[in-house]
Image 1 (cartoon, rainbow over the protein chains, first blue to last red):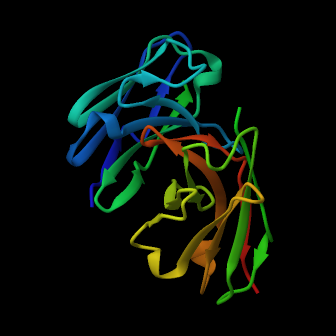
Image 2 (image 1 turned 135 degrees about the vertical axis):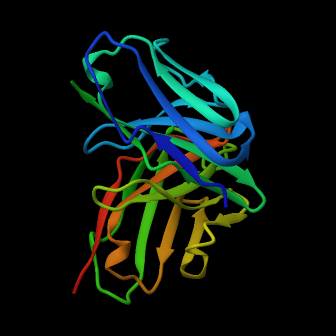
Length: 110
Length: 117
């Protein structure tokens, strides 16, 4: 089973700053199979990035994804107040078909 | 735009069976999505439970496979989750979602299920 480890656990930044969130896989993951989500308290997760670097519909371009193999990154170029939330990475494996999530990174206001 | 809505009992007794339904609106359940269930214990992370295609083909999380059944009802445009032999560890918010491009979108709003006597 591929394990996703996100770092840091908590990231404290100010609005306007740049955020860099990491997701490391225990084995190589196809870039096509890596996604990122944002979750605010009391809400369902929201898809931000799929295929490691493709923004989902309606996602602002300050959100970008990159990486390959075992190391993936979500970058928020200039933090807006509404960006403070928990972020999860997710990967898919095809045999057997299964989705797994990282443990999450909490992005909090400094 | 496809929208999802979970429904079902909010309280289940230990050793009982958790049953939830996800109604699909704004599109057909036969549209090409796979349909998933994901859960989130209070204050914790996300766990994928399993998925189903409109043909009835399923994939389950190996850690839950022995207790999970996901089914689809095309006539009602909905799919369902059954989780048997529940314990307090199954207390969680349960989400349904559509799966495409190896990611989940859209999501339902989620429903809290508490396992308690």
